[in-house]
Length: 375
Image (cartoon, rainbow, N blue to C red; front, side, top):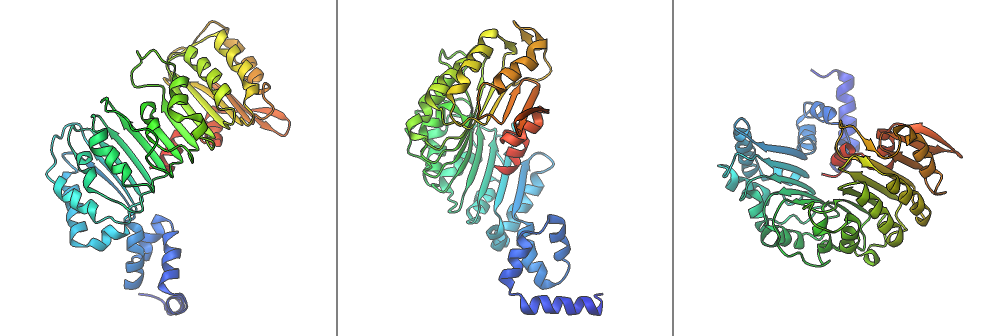
């Protein structure tokens, strides 16, 4: 039972602050506080519950199927719950060719008119992705899709063409060789994380950050840099500031930086990943020679995609610190530099050692933070 002072405080708050202001305050409260507010009164329950239900994560499995069906029933029975939802993540497992709740899931999705973030990982040949053409979300800002099928023209392209509001896109279409349209989709796109082959489909005028692999097929006789440059259309990407590319080996990494220094000298953040763990003297020298061509480069990071294997050099492993120092001093604009497992940042006029993880976070390449920030 409330104390008298608590009752007076509650009456003053609800008397002098309109519900719109209370709602704004509640929406910025931590999740634990939202749970507490739901117990204060019927008014606060009504105001806090929508914020508590703004983010939903759904997974299909033998034990979670009932949860999914219960969620869909709740949405259809109380459409106001769908109206409060802002972020939805849906994962469909490999084992399911069909899903009993799929029809009700689509009907539930249709009610989510204010959805801003949508994540779909659909590992079935036919599934939720095949229903994308029947869905529209007027306020959608970010969309993430992993889908192992050639459904680009049939499903995905049509969905994206009806959502010009999207600014953040993660798109991995595994397999399939459907033709890709040239630069017409998503006029507000700022962030792209996905397959390089699909880059040419999107408008690049506002594009600021790209994270991509060089190609789906390692046997394609084209370098990662030439693919990215061709698909980006450098002249159409004046705002591109951050680029992260996965390369097959050190030769392609050095080739990438040669191409990029000649075509995208306005880059501010560049990260190169190499699958092969063979570091050559030629690669080191190429990067050193190209760095002065970048006019605004603040962060240069080189690492390898697979951890745990022994790194093989044709230069001595004890030369790592000297290579890092050479790179760091090759450009007056650099503020941070990484070579494999060592990194440094510029503090005042001096370079100081830091952990690779710290530099990744400072440069905005921390994958864990990025996944939380960009659904």
